[in-house]
Image (tube, rainbow, N blue to C red; front, side):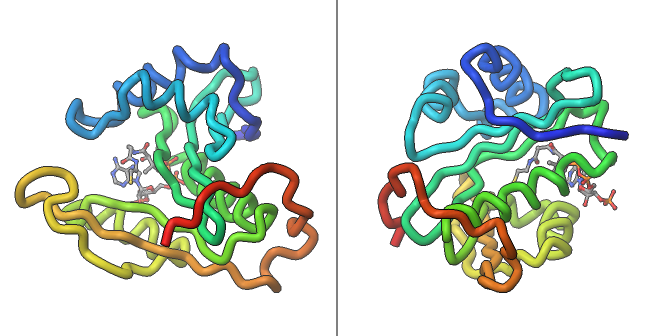
Length: 169
Ligand SMILES: CC(C)(COP(=O)(O)OP(=O)(O)OC[C@H]1O[C@@H](n2cnc3c(N)ncnc32)[C@H](O)[C@@H]1OP(=O)(O)O)[C@@H](O)C(=O)NCCC(=O)NCCS
């Protein structure tokens, strides 16, 4: 199935909100306000995966720090999951890290969701620390990081043209 990735525009906001509601439990969702901030912030990038008819099917929200790109949110329409869209969005995050000259790309995942932890491990993300009660009492998070080697970026390394945001560390 063919799909592509494009930068989100203001008109994507309803889709971004709806997808968040469909794929995350209420206590895990970003608020409308936070999602709007993501769309407007110069330190965040929102990317939309679209199918061959141009219909949006997935979202990737990135927060750009000086040395790190952090995946704030990644989600794929439930009826389109398992088609490789999430993998492609993750790879796109890595390409953005290359373009931004980031050293690493990071994310947080529910430590209990071993299927998801394995998914990220298969994409060369390694667990670096446990985040106690990150998702609520007893629901620990796991921070996973993929280091970006210059040699894997090829031509994707481009001059940084947008303000690089704060340093996460
Ligand atoms: C995780 C997610 C983005 C993957 O997108 P996708 O398009 O289905 O991914 P791909 O088709 O590239 O790869 C499929 C793999 O994703 C993982 N995956 C897919 N659905 C999943 C789910 N509901 N829970 C956990 N992992 C899932 C599995 O590893 C799966 O491989 P498997 O079927 O061999 O186990 C998507 O399932 C999703 O939106 N999940 C709900 C939101 C979420 O949990 N986001 C991540 C927060 S850290």
